[in-house]
Image (cartoon, rainbow over all chains, first blue to last red; front, side, top):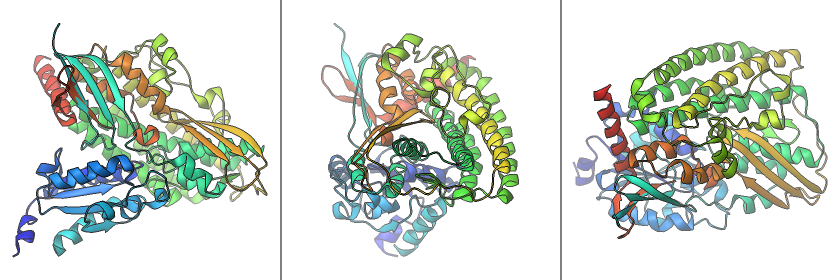
Length: 137
Length: 397
């Protein structure tokens, strides 16, 4: 067992960064934690500070104002940290990629470990993405 | 003079999903002033809209906000249809209203959940979100997606609600109604919720008129404004329903208005489904040859209030100018009235009571010391503060 897989062996704590998003991905992320999907069964908890987190979820297109904050949050994260880009906007910029304030996509700013496409991705897709990510790291 | 503190709420916090910065200027525990910064969610939508065709703009405007992803297309469709003097079929009107009202139910349930969370009632949060799921299933059944439905187009809707689906929709709605009864009962009869929300974040009738607040925020203060009644569109003039108002103007009144509106929405949907039975299946679209030059305004009642779209057409296939005003934009300004003079713990719920939607307007709050401009508390700390107040109250009741 490598150091990285050792780090992600137990309960994953998640920090959620919503960039300039439309809220769809944000509510689907919360939806994963509420009773129908209930990810908290597996110890996956949303935490209030990146310093406590193993996973950084980024969704939404990143605009010029969010860019520096995203970078700062990534720098504050204890490494190793898994970065997941959620939704069409997180992966590529989606419909907002041509906008004048667009500064992303996420992988241009910080290294990304997994992409979960969809607009918004269903909670099942988010869970499947995280499972794949953990199994492969 | 006593020492003043600034509490920043945001820009990034785990449960306020969107980025937004509020600065509460505090003297001890009392909020003396509030300022907010926006721009974390600017996506240049109005500009992008000018580069898209009328059919494509619908996909763009529904991504302004994922929670009210019917209201924006609704208002845009109303605006474009005004330019072209287009009259849509009755069936399309009913389908538009069904989608609009389903969205209101899911949005109000979402708000009740978040309000519960801010008060430290995570049970309410979990319940409300659990009961919201069947509504999303309905969306998936009707439109193919849980959010962002892509149902609207100029001159009608994209998909029909087939007769075979109607019994299932009715069964699920009956179930949602039972669950809403349960939730309403739990919220309305809870002494702690009463203690935390009654007389908190009061907006008087005059405040609402002065600040131009809209939606449930205004209706909770006794101002009966609702675009669905004042400037009827889609199937709303064809069905019977009433505008829900409350007089108190506090957080409790806002919750009451939202919970009771869910019942009205269910009733509207049921009447629309009956209406669908009387119209011809598949008759959902009017053919549009072109949009003439001119300008049009479109209004729609989103779960949070009035959405306003203004479109200028130069006769080409894309808008020459597109102006959008979302309800939270005006509602946020009422924080000046509702939060000042409150304690920090009450400010949290007063901010949430408006159900501010920053992806519409453009979310995050932190507290600062007024003199030193040092951060003393973040949003997580504020919620913790609010939760502490609830648990202390609970001991005394």
